[in-house]
Amino acid sequence: MSAAVPTAADHPGARGLVTRHRLRWWETLPWIIGLGIYFAFPDYLGFGAELLAMILFALSLDLALGYAGIVTLGHAAFFGAGAYTVGMLAFYEIWTEPITSLLLAALVAAIIGFLSGLVLLRTRGLTLLMLTLCTMALLQEAANMARAYTGGFDGLPDLAIAPVFGVFEFNPLYANTQYLYSLGVLLVCFIFVRTLIYSPFGQSLTGIRENLLRMHAIGSPVRRRLVICYTISAALAGIAGGLSAQINAFVNLSALDLDRAATVFIVLILGGYGRLYGAFVGAVAYLALEHFLAKIYPTAWQLGLGLLLVMIALFARNGILGIGEALWQRYGARRKTP
Amino acid sequence: MDFVANFAGILLGGLSAGTVLFIVSVGLSVTMGLMGFVNLAHGAFAMFGGYVIVLSMNRAHFGFAAALALGFVATAAISVVLERTLYRRLYRASELDQVLFTIGLIFIFIAGAIIVVGPESQTLQLPAALRGQINLGFLQYRTYSIFLIVIGFLIGFGISLAFERTRIGAQIRATVDNRRMAESLGINVDRLFTITFAFGSGMAGIGGGLGAEFLGLDPQYALKYLVYFLIAVSVGGLGSVMGVYYASLILGVLDFVLKLYLPKGGTIFIYALTILLLLWRPQGLFGKKET
Image (cartoon, rainbow over all chains, first blue to last red; front, side, top):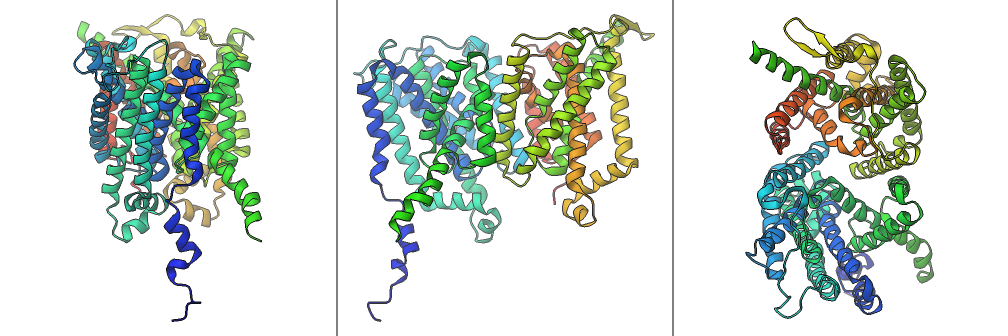
């Protein structure tokens, strides 16, 4: 065989597939910015820590909704489960070590995700949407009913969280520890999700989203994959909830609200779903937008948000990152190819 | 005798709440059955109609019947405008985009209500004839509740009669059953959908007005009762009028009983029952099985 004939692996398409999971230089940017904010805006670190928790929550939803195509409006169920796990353990002073608390939160959320996923994921479409909504409402009612343990609507205030690694204390006035801790948790979870997405398992999830019938036909265990993905996604949402409870030292019923589920849904879509960095872009854009709109129109800031959502649904189905990609393909890529 | 009166009182209270639920949800059921469009903004239409009805009575001193008619027409009109300009672009879009779009609409309606009317709750002033109690022979009961139950029954009966007996009803049934076949038989599904969408939204508007007396009417209405509307529709079965009627009545009575005897978190049973029922019959109680 002569050297001029390219092998299959040399084909540009194949090379693209082989190299697409490699780390790009710009993938370090979010973390550099994250660290930069720590030094540049020491007064906004509490806000920043909440932003990081929201990114993590949106990332967990991305796994279920963006990659596996499970359209759920009840993801706050797992966020709340995690938040209440951490909250109740800390409030009753059973367990206050932050990192293991987060793992417990992930475990509880994963169990709920597994059990509900096992039955919910038999259905599709409106029924699935309804079932996720009802599961969340059910958990919220349960938390409301168990007022003696969960504090009901008032929630559990003043949670005492032990120092991280036994050294770095959570200070309610200066959120330095909270911020770096959240950044660390997010980084670990992100590396996990990124690895998962580019694994064969992650690829099969995308396959299920794109063409369910074909995945059945090639013998992929579709239901099992979906349940596993839903469970992992629930665990991550639980970590996000637990993290939010720790940095706010507070948890109440709003952790299980439809409002919260809708917000994270919007954050993800705004950034662009099915893209690893959609959660990052979406959370920053959402909070900036909310802040800006609340300033110019404090009583009805939802108007701008609603208009934006309608525009996205009609014209920009892939969110901000999708717009960026389209622009890049049109103008940026042209320069490369002569 | 006391027990019977008690029991009848609970039943009537639940039935009247369920009736309002039915009037709001019936349009959602038919439009979802027709187009498979996940319209979460249906509650926003109910809220819009409710505002038109309540404000036209409180501020413009319309009569009750005239206000209801105005609420129907106004809601139907705004829904047609939205359907023709925006909704139709998303019929073939994914569920995700439909959910996103309708959530956006909800926010716009909520903000619109806050800007135009204000964040405070509005109250419905019932006409004198519907206030007070009525003697049913064996017990005294609120006239308005009885009025609601009768109206709801007439509406349910009327719509299902129209479904069975009129040409457009037959076309709707055919399209719900098999959209492609209906289209190839020359049924103009697009136009059919516009008509049913307008009618369904108008009914939702009336429901919003009728229910304002005990559900309240504030800008959060569109989101607050959304889960209930969706439960009524999915339990009843998409595209089934009688299914939604029965589901709404059951839901209304159940909610009333649970709130009475288990005021702390009794609604948990409603969610649990809904989940169990949907797992048993994903297509709802009266829905056609998906092929």
